[in-house]
Image (cartoon, rainbow, N blue to C red; front, side, top):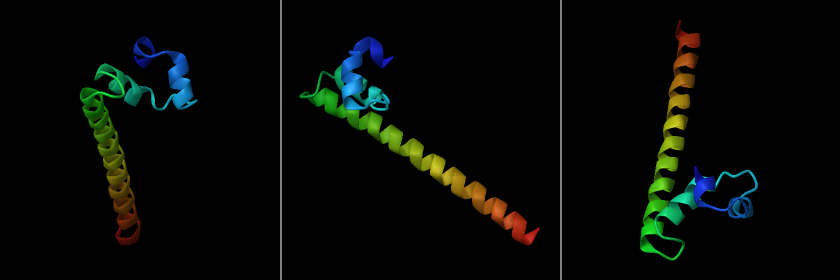
Length: 74
């Protein structure tokens, strides 16, 4: 994972829980913090994370509304 590419101190400095390890690894793989490739890869990772969160929220909303409708009308 990210620990093979980054130093553990860099991951901890960004976030103690290590939640930013994947974006930091993408930035490093793309060429570093000042490069265009790093910015593009970071944007792709961020977009995937956002889409995943949005899909989970949509699924939870659908499940809860279905459960609510079943309780009311069934």
